[in-house]
Image (cartoon, rainbow, N blue to C red; front, side):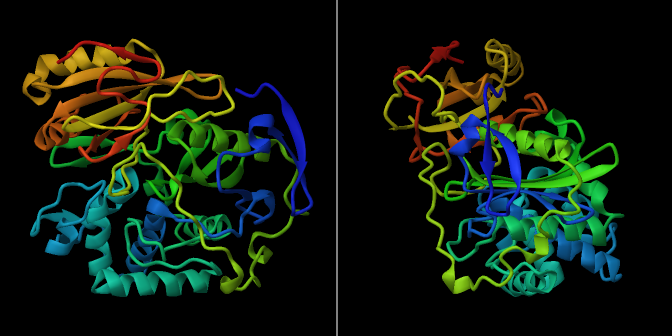
Length: 430
């Protein structure tokens, strides 16, 4: 993936080799820290404000663990969805008002599926209301030393006032690891079972990176692709934070590289301490973040955890890109696949089992270039909202693939309903 290396001098005074593509990085902030010593191995704009997206749910989980540790909640306790919880948009478990699930299932659904409805269910159980819970989240952040994080909801759904920093997210990750070590295995979950359906994790790093065993991803239109990752090799654990990456592929490649460099670095004992970085910087002096211009996502900006058809590597040769267009009806984007023929294979299997879901639709495979590898997404257009929802709810896609519904008003860059998109191949209308 990396063809050339460069040395850059960080503001913290440490040298770290990075790929030339990262010398002008395609992300907003990053930080790698030794989990035991809290020594910072890499930092770029670690104190800059950014939108957490579903990394917010790490604090929702933290407060749930805290309630369990204090005996206020048990894994077998049952929770009931309120109308407010059931009304959440973006990625959800599909709860209806009155639906019940256990605390154990709720935690797994929150971590594995980033379910916004479940986040509110837990928030209301622990805090009474989501608003009160958000206040508790911010207060807890200050107690942990997260100096520049503000929470306005339990989900990470778009709110311009809800901000964090890479430094603060690393502090939260370390608190989860050290204070609730007995609950940490929840973060390693590869799937969750709900009503007889096995739902795969959105965190592909668990499968792709040796030693990775947990934490959380997040995405909104404003935030881009975020991740907090924890990995352990040869008895040494690192925490990596990446905010504002431009695609799921770019996010996975960048955090993997930074973790690799962290593991290759010498002892972190003499490194700058995580808790000392930016702790005295006044919130009023920090620049307010400006939302990313991400076209290839749901138009409401909701976290969907999925990949997009937008190119992730502007440093690579690219073909001319078709202008953004509206979908003809609702759509579904499934990916990401490494083999160019895999989308067609899984589509044929899907058609054989659920032909009605694809009636009147049109399917394409859209290819974009990553750093050293191509990614392929299956895009289905011209369907109804119910069809799109059904497609993404079926147990038909490989566990590493993600499915997101796209409404007719969403602009999807690089996908043309006329078939003229960049590196687009029609694989047969369903």
